[in-house]
Length: 224
Image (cartoon, rainbow, N blue to C red):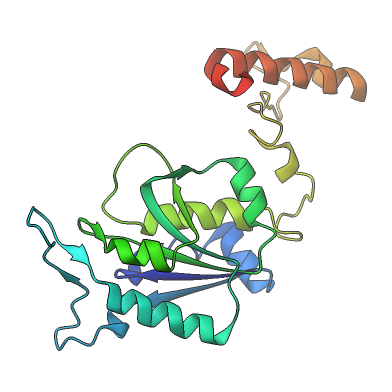
């Protein structure tokens, strides 16, 4: 799977993709993450990519020309199933969206900055708009990294344990059950006996009950 990320701050994305699971996925050839500097597509002498908003108001607006030039170049090289704009007013990222995107082959991610991007970019190029939460960040780079991480870990062969991603929180509309490891008894705080029993059916039942209980307590909205 290939992600092309268009940003005015490419260096901000160096670290998230250079470590851990995302790094291994790229080394295995299972994911390709390409970051494009939007300023490379500016025709201005100072490589500016923004201008004052029509109608007045505070802040600067990202211009249509650099985005259009970059997107059109990429589309001339390959087909893209999605062109996604990371924005607070998009649909909230959920596990089901990550699952859906993991079946795609080529995706473009647009990172906004300043006051926002020219609406015509959204009207003419963007196929989907996604938010990672009801708050505002300085730009779309961190949301893009979050989205890529959520999707890439689902690709076959990325995780050492192929079933691991399937048991994550939200995969079954429930939060995950508590997990434990050695020692079985730490200063009198013991691991539940059922997890030491070796009885798979009882363990599965315990995990489901615990997941349901945790979801009712912390995220009852998921049960609606």
